[in-house]
Image (cartoon, rainbow over all chains, first blue to last red; front, side, top):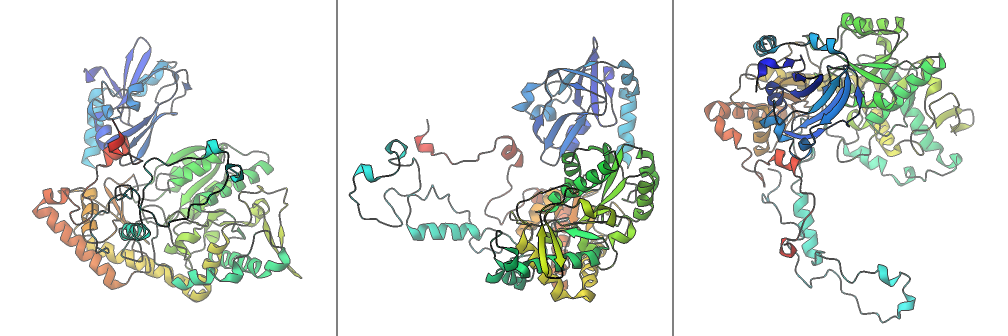
Length: 129
Length: 486
């Protein structure tokens, strides 16, 4: 699945960029922490969002968490399948469990994210705590 | 177990037998035109409606009721919720006939009721050091909302309602929702490694858009926010206000007054701290107290004490208006006043001392066998985690059911991984708490010897471990007659 090509955030989200479109999901670490996911609330296609806005709401047996977008832009596609099979996030966080696609308006925001190696170090730091 | 009938009764639909009835009526022969309801709206029969005799129905519901666990049947250390025992005499007083008046009664006829409201206001002013109170809000979150509306109204009167409310990550979960409802954007601020908010951190987040900071004190870690005065000063210098969520007031009432340490608005939960049972759908009551500058913005109605008795003012253009029909949940107010009067001024602090003592007793007794994620001193509750255990917090909670104890709050607050949030409350005896500690040690012992066994708990309950994931993903909310399906 090429994790090396993804960007990561401190909030344990991953981003895959192709032709100015960013696909966003949560990482394997995040899905494990959340536990079994039972409901995903998705935005509407066409919504514009700014960096730091909540663009989705993930409910697990443990908690309800917001997914904060680390990118500004417009929602161009949502993973509607998650409404019926939210467990896809648990089972396939990097593929079938993708959440939204955003048309990026501020490419420079990508620079603030970590690459896979940096994210691995970040995770190691958390585990040590 | 508190119920001797340790099996799950069948559903009322499943014990139905065709033709059974509770009461038999004589056939009445009346002509159709005497029936006031349009014939097309009348049903011949209701599909799958259960048919039972009276005794069947009584036994069914009595047996179902026996499956309840309540604070009247056993220990209930649900953290943050203050599931304490409340003296029954307060229920008795609240059910006195003379107090159950019609809300449209003329004020002349309900002077006693109005006096009760005013008296409780005075008690709460004394306990909290706030300048004025309204007892109108129907529950805690309603109080939070009213309080945030008061802040908004006050700031508007100065020409700028501002945009942002700061909320620490250790605050009650309702705080962000209430502030958002009052029209504010929320910014979460992190607490430090001691589990409290730093003044330095608050400073970083302050700007001219910040309307207020909502602080839960003691916070959801059970820790007193010791920097509150410094934080209040910073906020006030910035023209922002400090909202203090006082839902956990049993931790320090009679000892510290929020009004003395910089709070501009607070709410209390009469249904947690002041003798109304908590849970079960209410009614609750979430009075708010405010400083002198904010009193004029309180919601109506206001109870006015005059020379010739009490009157009710429904008109206050400056205030936030009405937030509830009539005047709050009056009988909850009655219970709170009865409770406080029975305690007496000098014993209010004793409540807090006992609540803190009980929680710290558990902390001391279990700290060697469970991980204590925050080492700071805690007040009315204590939080452990499942770190380094061969089982999870959920497994321990489920096993507690086998011993007839209601589990503590699990996996909250979110900032603690695998949190076990235990609040014994001030009303539990040493014997009960010792018994709980023994059970916890026994369970931890079982966990070490045979973790797999714990993962299967509970064993002695009418149903075993439920599939919470399936229940949440594919909930079955109504009974369907399988015989008719297909």
